[in-house]
Length: 189
Image (tube, rainbow, N blue to C red; front, side, top):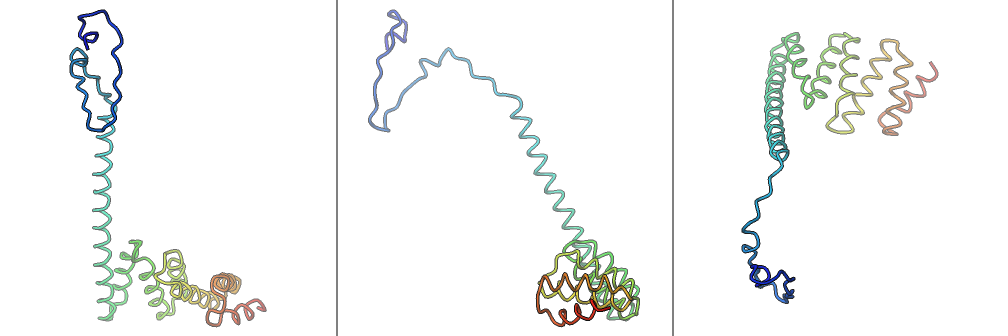
């Protein structure tokens, strides 16, 4: 200790080995003259960027939620218009609702049915194709949309495309409804 305080020539202090975790060492004597290390400024900037990112994510989530709320309102409005007999208004509302990824499959499928009921096969096919590009709630729903698409393609004379859809469906779910018979029949055409 005297070597550290400067009373005697500087000799290395003897080392003590602690055998217990309860030993406390006071280094304030040695550290009195030391200046605190400067903190890097980059760390403060990183914290700002992280906060900006956090708030940006919160804003994005709020906007997406707002968009989903609007889409759900349009979906409900579309169903109400369909029930009242305003099919054109229903389709317009459902088209707006289909912009939300969460509602895309269901709305596209419903719009396709409405066009099928109107005998507008090109529109029905277009909306069924949109439905196939969205995640389906169940595998059976996805398979049924593919089957409906193959049906529509066959009715419009697009046999090669109908066969391709049936082959895709057969590869995904062997034995789904009458797909094997359709593949056999379409491959002969």
